[in-house]
Length: 305
Image 1 (cartoon, rainbow, N blue to C red):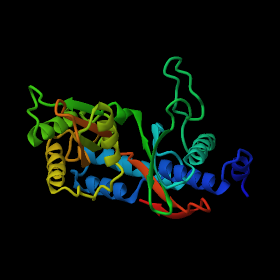
Image 2: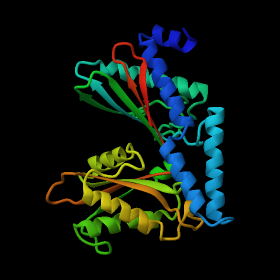
Image 3: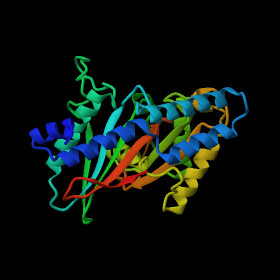
């Protein structure tokens, strides 16, 4: 048994579950998913040789390779640590949360995560990425026999580029798809390559101000080549990416053809009085990984992404 597993056992945390989550965090921090790597590689190939855009994307590609090779954090900003968890009915979610929180602490000690969580009043760094609201847990039950955990690390730079619009809007239009599309493109225009573009957008049409952002971020769990099941939204996703990439903003705002790598749009019911468009802007360091875990043993059954 490893030292970390022994530590978990001493705190009444299932050692196998703890080790599995710790490895999930390491993979999420250091190894960019294949779908994102393919998109970055294709974007670099599409840019003019020797252009600032090609150079920027080449540097991004080198960063991706070095992080994987050295098992080092892909970005200096650990970002918000988001856990999306599905458990069978009757599974002890409190124990899982305790194991995941301790795994975050150990991942920080090991250098998989950088120390990135500070007190909002004092500015003091907790030193281990835990504290009120950190990490963030989204628990859901399902009737499948296994546990599924997905982790997403969303940096502060791209989080600052998030936007929420209330329609109708005097410059952007009414409560229709045209107004929605204009709102999304305005978000891209306002970002101007900030937030470590090329970006990936998660969007929610509807909901309230809180749930809209939650659904928008959940869209970022989808694969880049996974269109919406709703053909209307799928068409809107393609249209937004095409128009954004004609803007000339380009990666990091250096100009070029690659302003967005993807746009993923979902929807939620809303109140008649409200029509929000919530946009979660993700950077090129699109860190998300997942694992299916045997509920009885706590061991990984399959790795996702």
